[in-house]
Length: 182
Image (cartoon, rainbow, N blue to C red; front, side, top):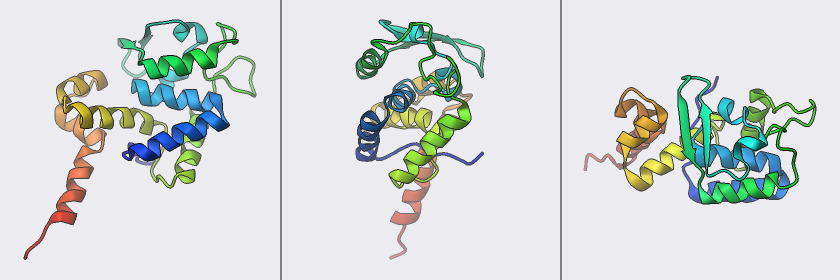
């Protein structure tokens, strides 16, 4: 698996959202779920419409950690969910495959969707985990609350979280570009 990065540029992130909203409502919702919850794609793909429709928060047991998690739904995400699920069967998967009867898309398909989006917007190293990292990166940039972010991501240390969201890379890049001898 290739190393993936967060989407750092907010204009690019906004343009990606607008593009997906216009071209593919399912992929748009997948992307919005990723960048507004910070969940892993494996957890997003488990949701059925009844898990999120008319809800104030998402309740799930994380696939990787087995831990129960409660996520308050951001108002922007709530609007996207409301628009998307309006006339859909509550038992349907939220991010439903068009090939299989009431099955979610595969993690591989989600990866292809993100990879193609990255190519379209000239964002290298984009994959499904980029959505989670994007949420973490921008949350940290806005709040500098590494302790809460570490807890949300269930990381063992602040250093692990900073590395995970790409802040270490930002610092290294700045060290190289701003360094001068004279």
